[in-house]
Amino acid sequence: MDSFSSSFNSFLNHFRASANSFLSQFEPLALLLAPLLTLLVARFLQSFLSVIHEKGLKATFLGFFMSSIKLIPGVKSYVDAEKQKVVDKLHSGSKSIRENWRTDLPTTGLGVGVIDEMKDEKSKDVDWQGKCSGTVYIGGSESEGHFSLINEACSMFAHTNPLHLDVFKSVARFEAEVVAMTAALLGSKEKASGGQVCGNMTSGGTESILLAVKTSRDYMKMKKGITKPEMIIAESAHSAYDKAAQYFNIKLRRVPVDKEFQADVKAIRQHINRNTILIVGSAPGFPHGIIDPIEELGKLAYSYGVCFHVDLCLGGFVLPFAHKLGYPIPSFDFTVMGVTSISVDVHKYGLAPKGTSVVLYRDHDIRKHQFVAVTEWSGGLYVSPTIAGSRPGGLIAGAWAAMMSLGQEGYLENTRNIMEASKMIQNGIKEIPELFIIGRPDMTIVAFGSAVLDIFEVNDIMSCKGWHLNALQRPNSIHICITLQHVPVVDFFIQDLSEAVQTVKENPGPISGGLAPIYGAAGRMPDRGMVEELLVNYMDGTC
Image (cartoon, rainbow, N blue to C red; front, side, top):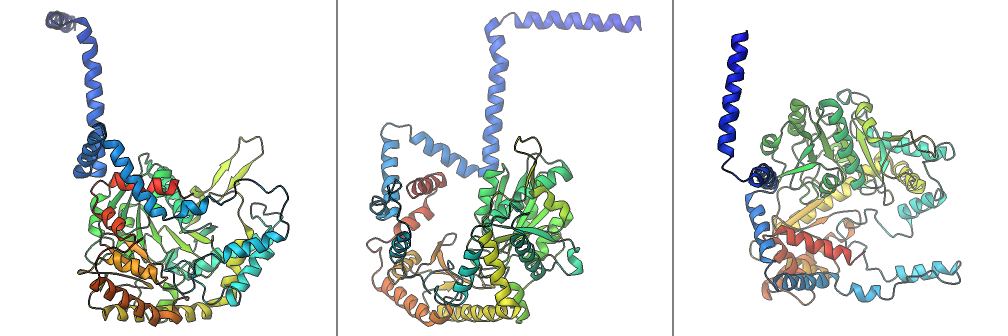
């Protein structure tokens, strides 16, 4: 033992002497700075590789190149000026309108006269009846029928707030029943669901998605200890997932859709790793109205032990009834193994007032991670189920009234009407040789493009005719989301669309005031960071 210790000490002394001899040829300052510089270089390389891994090699170098170019004197100011021109074009005169908006309270209140002023302002809104993609889902005139019913229901409970459960017990009941009735449409009473489906009402599809993502993050942290969460979505998934990723510090992996414009299960599988908390499927997706392969995605999520959210914000109050009517609707709800949460908007095809949605979970163990409980506040013990604390009880009451007044028979009849209108519009588009339909729509969204015309120019002409459609990208196209408002005007839509195509065919090129050049340029612009800046600047000048 003494021999080994002596040999080891001799080795250390020799090593120390050799090291000191070697380092003696360097300046002490260099020896001090070398490890620091090495650490800085290593951190830079780590960050650089992380950006490449997240954005891709092409996007990273393009962003670096554009940032470098802007360092040249005069270039940045020129680029900013050109961007401002685009933003001004997007605003299209809204700044002049805002100049007349009030910035101070009136000295003397208007009293009941404020209603007359509101009616005057309302009369200046565009004629939206039957002309908007989605937007208004209730049919008929807003002064009668279902409109009148939910307006009365909302007014009756306008003062209520479900935060105060002990006071507004009626609203608490309404919310519980809206959630339960919605869940029943989506398989909660089937054995395959597990019999524990639960949820809450929210302010809309975005909040429902935000809560589902936040809940999945916290649930997977508890279950697997994941602290650097990632989620995987198809590029057709709603932009609310981008918002959730930014809000909750989750890395978002976006994968291309397959040739049928559905979520690519194989591509999603390739992106799953030890940090994956959630994958997403849409039924249907907002852009093209196509249902993702929910059963395949459910099996994938189940096999990897990750959460799986199904976005039924559009389809929740159509697909169950379309299935009953005999349409070939694939499985999409809690009867699918692996589905852990679902979002569904009541204010779309549920025909409830705007600001009502539902988020559902397979069981209470998952949903508990949605809640926020505070024990150390001087204001007392506090617990809240959703993002908002106070919530408008009038909207909850309006949603309950909508569902109870229509019943299953009402929703069946509405679904029959809009599905037939969707088929009529698809057939009408197929008869216009310059257009083609994107994929095979499963529901009431019909997207279409053109290989011979600028589809955004067609959209501009349709706008001139009073239509408000949605412009899409990848591929360039537009869509109409069919509601009860469109059932009586299907023939007018096809006629106007045919005329718009003919106009562009005979007179190609942008029209005065049209947005086709901006949409086209944005789609071709390789620097997506610049497009993002344009959108942010536009929003900053709008609200």
